[in-house]
Image (cartoon, rainbow, N blue to C red; front, side):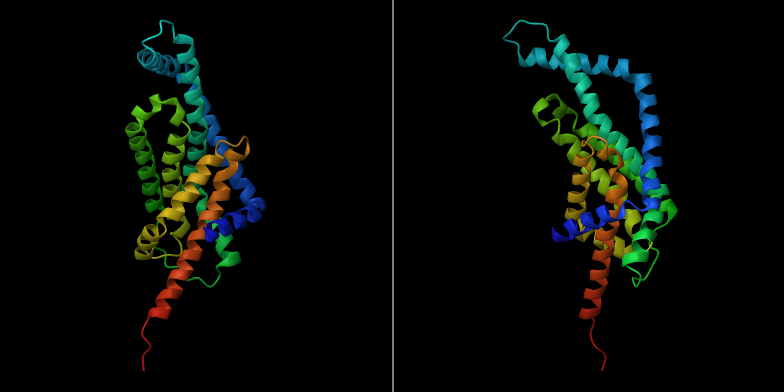
Length: 248
């Protein structure tokens, strides 16, 4: 837990660099324009479909009371879309950042704090793109699996945090290590650090709901993931050196 706190503190100290500020701005701008376009095209149809599902659910849940739940269902449908919109904008910006911006952030972090860490180039640009595609497919799959739980309003806030927590760490972890770790080291660290990465991903998912700040959080957490995983890589290599037998 201390390493997570240290990585977040490092990220908060580092994100005001001009290069980081630029990387904070343009992926978010692209994501906002994209999702505003989607909403303009699909808002009415999405509200109508969700409203109908919500009305049926409310009618079944309150069958002992005769009333028209249409207005409540429409309000809940709008609330649900808003709950989903913020993390979708953030994840879209994160995907753009993962493919096009993470190498710059990695260089920024490594040149200042991990100059002596060997670069073994276990990742590739194609691997980064494939990783992002897997993250999107995972998002869709988890979204479909979670559909029955969306009809229980008390747990709405938890569902996107759990799902986007997984997506966030999936997007960021590959590019954080691609330059410095070998392919074997990447797989090992993904396995060993899975809970720490997932916790960072869930914190990012929660920050998505903080007004204004949430939109620009991907770069901050990109910095945190890079620091966290490069430090884990450095410790892992140090442990292997210490464990190696001494030749006589």
